[in-house]
Length: 567
Image (tube, rainbow, N blue to C red; front, top):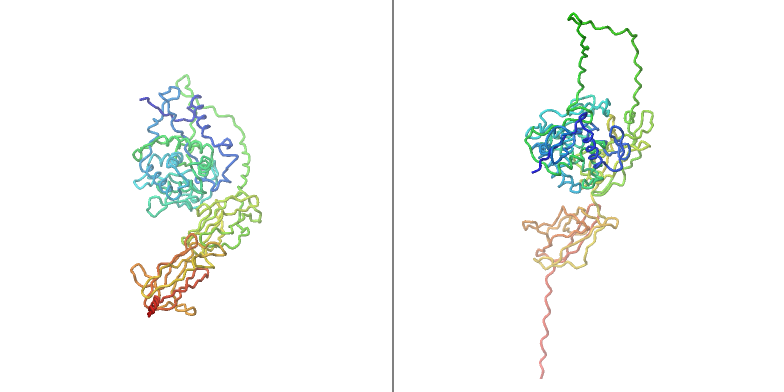
């Protein structure tokens, strides 16, 4: 067997040959049509402001270690390998289980996304080194916190605190949290309970992996399509170098991986902020040490020569940092949103629109506004099946939410609008979902409905519902055998239905028309009472149909005439 050796690319210790190979590897996976600046951030195409949610991580630093470049034999010019390909391919058992269970869950809930668990593994490797080599408890919670740097604008994004330090322990600014490095403001709406313990914990790899999967699968992205895959990865951390690194690990894990014990995974070394730790805290500046003085001919030491005296200089004033568009926003204004009403299952005809303004009422462009559907008693979503959407304001300062789609639950719910990255009073909009309706009911046949006493009707009653001439599907209906046209109370004699136990029933509730607006009632039976009886069917929306039922004894055939005698 030919031995394969992996190599880790190290900063400051890479030969020209390895650098060329690394650049070639990155170029091969480069997202098409994307230009970058000297920090690897995109300058054209999808940028941080135009991505649907900015980023899951607040564009925090990430590990830049690339997968091993396998060769048939060790190459002396590339130094000592940091780990073999087999070791790098190992994923800690609990972490691997979390990725695979999250992908299986998404395969059932969002099959069109085609999320491979290897993508979660690639992002987990780049974000936290697979939870710091699998440093997790048996239930998947990290043993020590994994925190990104303080996002205070000092070399990183400036994101003021959004969780009062609940997740990241910082009540001044946000920090990326946990094995998948979610910032608190994203976790607030994207968090999931992946291990079924009733909590949504960004420090738990099962919760974080499922949240990452849902985050990557939003907006109806199909991750088997390269364009959608690139967009999803860039939405997680908006850097082309990040995209390339994740794609490299995705390809590597797809070629084969295996389980290793928790706590024994290979730890990455290099990060995009030139740090080697998952938790970045400012390091104290070491005290300066004076240079050693040369010995004197007599064996002593010379006293250091004092530097020439120079007058103190006044440092130049630091130019003020201009505020970001988000920092200039003072409030949200409604941008002409009309009443939000829809029938169950339909798309709302009106969309929520707001405008970000300064204290002087000037519109602010390029600000992210989050729209959140609030309430546990609704199953309404935005187009694409999500309950949260983030939109960047246009040149007029306006952000318009995606279209709302009503679920089957009726009643009111709230669409809450907030400015991402600012603690400002949001705007709430009440949306109402009414029950499906029908305004017309007709029988699908005109066959007379007759029966003999004590028998059963040969034909079942079938009706079709419409609303404004269109099929009225999934409309609730009730059928009652009434006493008369003027008395809609339930009859106590005549035709009847049977329940599951064979008991007499003369009122049926919880009926629903099918996808074609058709409702077929159960079989009808007759007691010993003869006469004409009425069946009334009503629907939500006011449609009513009264059907006649006849119970009569079978007609007695007339006797044949006696033959006439002949002489």
